[in-house]
Image 1 (spheres, each protein chain N blue to C red):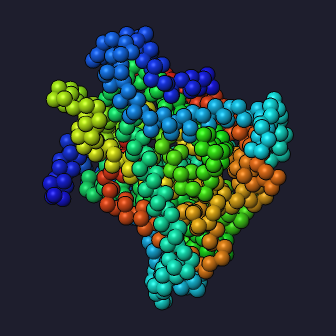
Image 2: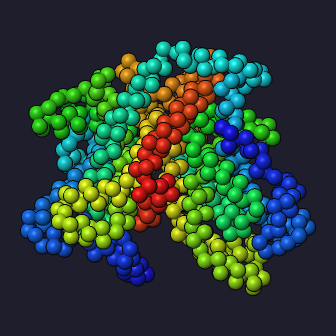
Image 3: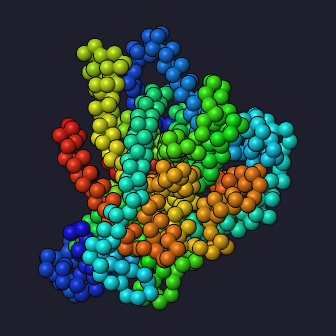
Length: 328
Length: 309
């Protein structure tokens, strides 16, 4: 949070910005302190920065600072907020639902990695060798990303109909499986949600991998062939190592994304059956917006800050551990 | 026009995107076993992509005009027993999908305008005009990328309920969705990167000819940055069309809600065939945009990876 303290600095009154310029020396084009700043582009630059400053101050920087403050307050929008120390954190940590939400979110992340991480990579590597009509392949792969997630979720909810006449049950029936309970059962609900989430997100990752695959220098393959490498060894020893930068980033981005999963369980199962798909973000939503006694905004922000801190620590450790691996 | 564009794009693809070889060399391609396996794999891949990517959308299109009983009894029948075009009309008028559809359009247009305005002006100020304090601003914008959006959810909601200086809640106004959309660090960075890559000589020359900062922006920078404005636009519209949680929180009046918020609630009290027709209507615009601006979408998606990477 230390980098957030200067948030109050950016909407500088012109004089303040001028003195900065004055103190650090002349601008590139014009010399001469405050007057020069005024005669030059100074005020005009600020005009162009206004939309950014307006939206970021109000809707990004200030809310981030607010979150850090609100986690230690009781806010009900009627009486002035009151400091309550670590009470909100105690409330959240004492909630019996928290354990389930954390376990479910981890389970979602693990399943999403198992399914959603290798599939786009394999598809992208295969697609990179397509010589004709590769645009068609990309378009087909990207289509699910275009479908609005709400439409996708409602559609898949119908597909997941647990009766033998359900769409997916008809399909698995062809190979003699089922009927499966899909979203209705505690054991299959989360994998079903992950299957949908993977369907709706894989296309974006495929396109990112494809762009990276095109960047692999052909000379590397030539060299590998001179050393007698076959197709598989070229994939293993050239393609994958060349993609490692992108792979490292998509991995951590996927973890951060899955930690904040909301729409899929919210629409497909509403957290059920028996809280087996209640995620951390759904719990935050419940604290703040589904409370009949008025939102517990303090508990909601406390939990979101804990989640953010865990993610930050995880990312830091991840980048530390993979540092030697990512730089060639 | 289309002709020149396609030749240019194929040339570009030959030049930059696909070198004359990939993992497989020409020698590999000449080997029969490799060639047959590769072709076969590609065929299987194409069929699977077709079924998985397009299948559900085609199913939705079919079911939108199929009577409920048909869909329930034989959901996977390739051709319905009867076609019920009335579903679409009924969804549009009786269920008032038209209203939610236009709400979605208005929200998307507003979000598009705000995002393009913030991204281009900020990119211009920070990458072309480059004030001394620019680095601080860029740093602060960058820093927001590292804060998970979930942290902002509740405080942002309270900002909308009690906005500073305004003294009036923005709940149930489109401003509640439009304004926060501007604070998008990703767009700003994307545009800045693009402006950084433009030749500075052009700006210097325009300056020599006496163009002020506004003239430079309007006559030089905006026309030159059409490609990146296109990418930002496409992503703004699609993201606004997709958004669910935020409009759900700030647009409580059903008459103001977009399709994404309204559809889950409608499900409970309308017939299945009309509901599926409504889902199909909600998908038409994004799919149409994708078909028209395919290259923009796919280039933009890979650009996303480049910036994130």
